[in-house]
Amino acid sequence: MFFKKAKISDLKEMQQLYIETIQSVCKDDYNVAQREAWSSGVNNSERWTEVIETQFVLLAIIQDQIAGFGTLKDGNYIDFFYIHKDFQRQGIADKLLTELELEAKNHNSKIITSDISITAKPFFEKKGYIVKAEQKNIRLGVELINYKMEKDLL
Image 1 (cartoon, rainbow, N blue to C red):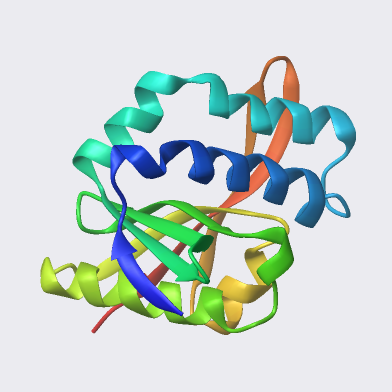
Image 2 (image 1 turned 60 degrees about the vertical axis):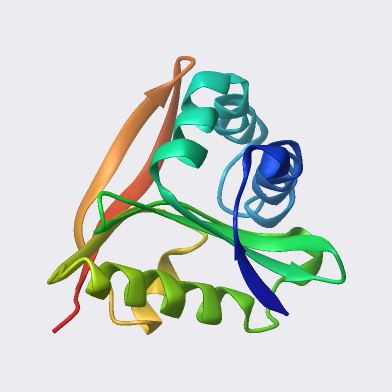
């Protein structure tokens, strides 16, 4: 596995990974309507393009395939963090998170934050993130629960 920064040409594969991960990996924590509402975010092409152009976007590559990706916005906020459904539980998330935290430290950030799904919450807790709030978001009329989490980088 190696890391590389994402380019616009990686966008379609990233979006496919995003949809498949939500639909497959999150199925025990979110019902069909919730996963559909969440996945619908893929249709906001302006947002995806803006993420690539303005955020630190790191891809984990295995055998010429994106195995996962994470993004760091403003040097201290993990905006996207997804591991391919076929590459779960192989240490990719651990390595990717370490790289994002290093990048945050390079920005002299003292705290890193993110909005974490029910599915990802146990992983982030193991990595030292603390729940600051449970959040109820409405997307396409469907309630989605996630958690505002943060970690001290000092």
